[in-house]
Length: 357
Length: 181
Image 1 (cartoon, each protein chain N blue to C red):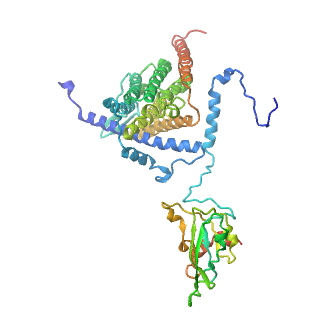
Image 2 (image 1 turned 90 degrees about the vertical axis):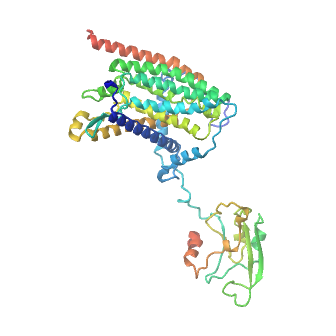
Image 3 (image 1 turned 135 degrees about the vertical axis):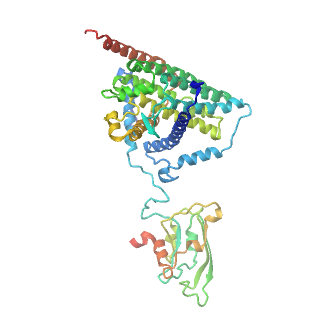
């Protein structure tokens, strides 16, 4: 029984961490909607929302209130259980990704050293891929349960798009894993932030490009937003949804966006590493907790840039046609990722064996 | 074929080169264009806080004028109503009583004076027709309203504030334009 003894402080620590991270991701997603409209406005020479609060900062609250106040409609011919399950699943899978992401090195509270990562599992990347591919179920189930042709079509589009781009994404990650030799996100970040270590973007620029394009496709963002293509499929898979169920779908999209931004930062841009500074030396001069705060801010700055990049692309590039999307996914991205993998493998082999050239 | 204008362009149908097929340079170009717009000055005018500067000849809401002593200038002659192409103006005349000399400038005055702002086309012909300089168009426009009746402006909506008792409001109502003339 001694192995099963439960460390209460440990559970408390993890519960607080989970609560904190979920709150932060929800707030970030909330303000992403504001930022999206603001960025869209600025890029189109408009001002964006600026009526609710200073700079329109209360706009997300107003939007949320509006969604809560709306009438909850469940279509008669729909499958009611699945209809409700869809948005819940979309939201849950979006939040689950955050579990393996290291948000900072560690903090010291009440004499305990707390790692700022919910679960440092040694197959972190595999876990993320598993959860990401679960995300398509939210779309599939929602689209099918609405009993609407457009929704079903959109759900099918979403599913096939996600499967197509997941392949290229996985292949681009394999090349990265050959270099790091670890699937744990924490190890990958520590390799990058160690003294003398470079960010992975320098070793894997092509891999990053492929990963980013696939992340756009996985998040259903423009130029790959075919599942919700407003002008072709009315509103895509969430056409029959109203009130907060619709809000969940829209929210899940923004959380996904945040999570893939964080993931891109973690895998290719050093994660919580503070650029141009030796983190280990900084810990000695500033104390663990201050450095942890700085590291968290550094990660958020990187993620914020990628979120901005997502929006920037959305308001620049028009949507792909469906055959073009498939063409890009299967005939361009996958061969490119394979070539990238091959080159990386050759380089790794040369470095390991020291072949005389 | 001869072109009708010099603006027409032949459609370029040459097969894409490898550079063009990469798409990335073109995407980068497009992104730089949107980013440059991000930092451009926005032409939006935040209406209730800021207002668009009107041209000096702007014709807005009507004002019934008073003279320096605060007496109404209008004599209800009806020339403005005749001049009005939209038939927006109606009035009823009345005779000035003994002891009302400080209220009305002449012996006859408008007991009722109404302009339907939904009919009015803000052409300014009433201003031109008026022999007594009693009506002119100001720099403001009609605010929105929930009811049609709200757009029928009576005398208390149109009359300029008394320059003797309310000089501040009077100056505000006169606005920039009369100061210029």
